[in-house]
Figure 1 (cartoon, rainbow, N blue to C red):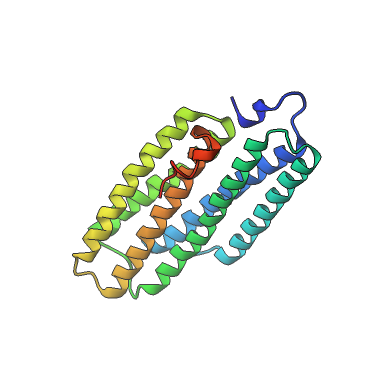
Figure 2: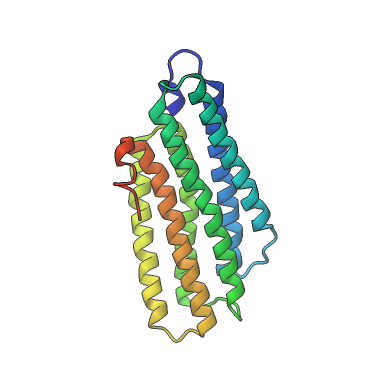
Length: 216
């Protein structure tokens, strides 16, 4: 059962619009993450303006908050918990844009292409995190607790792999700028995964426990 199915009677158009904004934000965040991480870990040319896309995310976040507030102004008792969860989700989605910009910045720190076995592992973990975007969007829209829990389990596996990579970088003989770039990138990828897992947590946890049970 999707979140909109919890409404009785006609679906509130303001909430439908807010849910559309969540989906659009996650799609934009996914594209930013893909471009920035390809620039860092695959040495590809960055052909998108991350700052411009981040500004677009901010505008969508503002539009969602306005839509939810207008809905609550009309009927403050109707689906209050869902509205609060939408506020939580949009905050998580917005942070992904910031982290994608950090990944793009990290690529500029390195003085040479990122190559070698550690980077190969980071690419695989990046790929795994990229796959979580659509899963987070779909499990939230569909209100699917099974997929939400599966996402959280997978994110924890990826998180462990990224932590191990950072420890390997610290013990390696990588050139300093490359080590800094890869460490910054690994941290940002970890945080992106945590924000996606927190979105999934909004599906499975009651509102008062959303952050108590969130990924950190």
